[in-house]
Length: 205
Image (tube, rainbow, N blue to C red; front, side, top):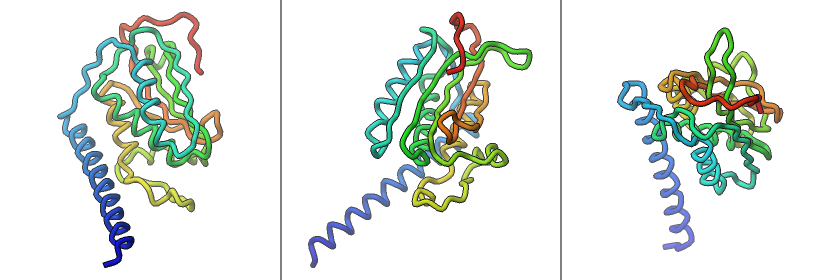
C-alpha cells in the first residue's frame, strides 16, 4: 500500500529487465559470431565518421567522464559497418567502467612491417587502474572478469571484450589489451588495410 515503496520496486524491476535484455543481446551476438552467422564483409567507407558518431552517441552514458577522439584516417578504409559498431560500443563500455576521468578513442593506419601488412587500428584508452600484463589475454575469454575491489567490480557480464575479439577476427585481424598512454588500459583492434589508400606520414597517435 506504500506508494513510494511500490515505485521503488517497479524501478528495481525495470533495472533488472534492462540488465537481462543487455545480457541476452550480448550472449546472442557472441553466439552468432562464434557460429559464423555474423560474417564480416568489409567495404571501403568513412570509418572516421562512424567512430565520431559512436563517440557522440555514447557520451551521455559516461557518468561525467570525458571522452575525446583522435581520428587520423584516410577518407576510405575497409570495414564492416554492421559488425564493427559491436566492437566499438563494447570497447567504450569497458573503458567507461574502469576509467577514472578520461577516455580517448583513437584510430590510425599502421604502416606495414615484416610481420604484418598495413593495418587499420582503433584504440580505446582509459586512465583507470589498467590490466596486469599477465592477464591481458585472459580478459578476452567469455565470462572472464578481473577481480576488483571497487564498486564497479559488480558490473558487466564478461562478454563485451569477447565480442570485441570476435569482431576483430571476423575482419581478419586481432584485438589486444595493452598499457595506455593515459596510465590505464588500451584496447587495440587492428585488421588489414587491404586496398585502402595509405596516408603519407601517418604516425601512431
